[in-house]
Length: 208
Image (cartoon, rainbow, N blue to C red; front, side, top):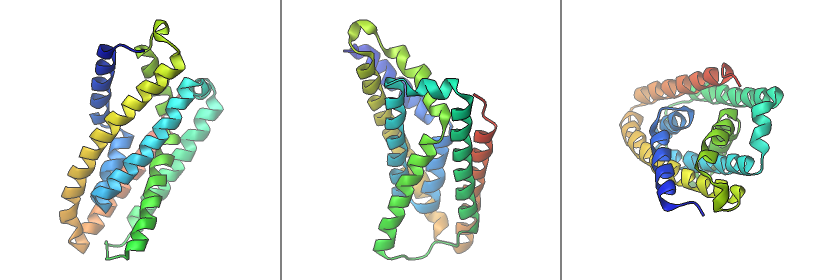
């Protein structure tokens, strides 16, 4: 088992990395500001579900394929960029927020959860980052490497939930003031769309 001091160092590093500006936390911020705190929480759960897949990919060697295969890297990158462009288009054409039935809101939560999963899984840089980051805190003398990777991945997910949850609260609270005005809501939608479009461009120009 990994020593406690190593786990503490890893968790602290993970928290700091989660705060660093990046596609995922900007995505959570935009969704929270546009649709509320709960939207940010649901997207965060989706993103963390994606992190489970990346952790498993590293633990069982699949992430190495993404790192070494230009085709796999490019396919994931283009799929992710295309999805972000689709979200940007939706945000730009969205009307100001209006009262919706509770049942419709539940459907939206499902969509937001899937958005988080797709956003995370289609970013090949996450797998490559995990492939470089997680093994640094493992030790063959402490047991099976795959189990250590899974433990570290779970800790990273906990750090992500805590940090992104705080971001959701902050951005959702701030965005709530804008959502009271139809004009401000349209501006907020345009800002969210611009963030999604910018993330798409950033992903498209990312190199392996």
